[in-house]
Image (cartoon, rainbow, N blue to C red; front, side):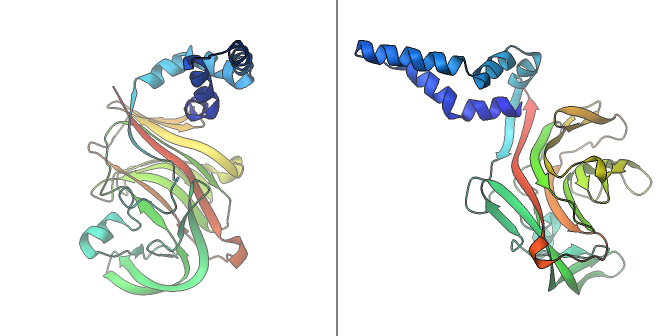
Amino acid sequence: MEFFREFSKGNLLKEYEELEKARHTSKEEQRNAKIRIKEITQSESWKKYEKLKKSSAFASYLKLETTFEDDFNGEKVDENKWLTKFFWGETLLGKGYSHSEEFHNYTEGENLEVKNSNLIIRTSEEESTSLSWNKKYGFLSRKSGFTSGIVNTGKSFRQQYGRFEAKISFKHTDGVYNAFWMVGNSASPHLNIFKVSQNLELGLINGPKENNQSKVSRLLLKEGSYIVGIDWNKKEIKWLLNGTVVKKTTTNLPDSPLYLVFSSGVYKNTSIKAKESNEFLIDWVRCFKTN
């Protein structure tokens, strides 16, 4: 439905509606309007739009109510929607932290950029010092040779059931992961909507003994743009890649609202050249519930 959404917001439909509503005071204006309307309605994009409106997919789309969206059209991250640190870092500490088992430190917004209607999460090789959560010792100050970024909707938006999707772009950088995931008030359930590192990982983690993860080689994915998401209801979760269902599960489903997280990071010791910083691009995010 990405084409339909973009077309509905585009100039061609707007122009057609304005021509149809306009009161043309002369025969020349009427003639020019008819010519332009004919050009519009005979274009390939208009024909595709009309065909889509008659499809069952469009009927299903009309039943969806938008509950959250961001097209990243501003000049910076909208802090009314996004936290630029872990939710619990903000809630408990008022500052960010990272995890000791990973190799990067999260900065508080320095590795985030909004540019050309994209949110960019940048992972770089550079020295930094930040708090790190260690399961045995708690929060400790740690030096790291890598920095990255994270955003989440823990304070602004949570939802149980519905469709959650985003258009993302990425490149493969050895040792770096890019991820779109959901979580609630505890570490599990942790729902990986799309995580690409050494493998593409999709699935649901309910603690160390309940790990319903599917892993396939990342080489099956070419670098580029993908629309990734899930459909989640009381009976199942379906994972979608460019509109195609690629995974399903019906067991141990989350029983509470979850919030959105986008993050990148370093999962093994590696080398990232300064001019080749890993960039994870989020073009848009949309969430829906069924009317």
